[in-house]
Image 1: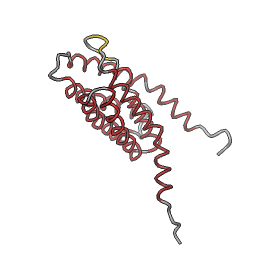
Image 2: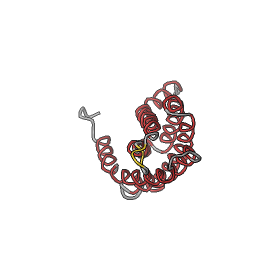
Image 3: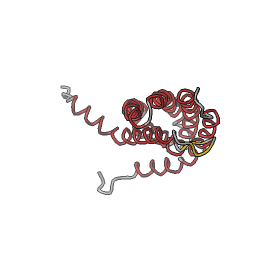
Image 4: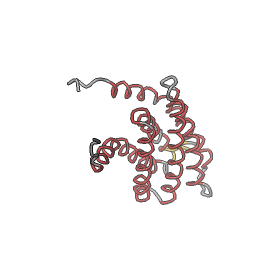
Length: 188
């Protein structure tokens, strides 16, 4: 005889398992949407220093919980981050960010999934690179085209920093994988 499955319990467990990555995603995206409004110079915004963490969150979620949960994190994070960004930033930045975020993060998951069986560093590096290129191009063209800001040079500068941070994020990615794969001290 088949056991009865309690769907609210399954949903609660599912929501609990993605709560931390969703929370991290919302904070990173909302903070980045505020910081992108403040250029450091003609080729870089403060948002370039925070946004790459979103790819680290996505890649860790994809590796540890699979692509289905990672897509769920992206979708829930998208809704919450856009709503928060409308309030904290501007509607144009929020919508540009949401569009770019969905395209870049979903592409990141797809590329990561195709490369996950290779060397531990290849999937996060290549997927973050591809996702960053798409995200940056979409975001800056939607958020700042037609304004007086030098958005093309800002996009290129931000992309360069994001790509450098993708390489630097390999260390935290590897450390998080080792930490999360370590056996629990109590043996459970």
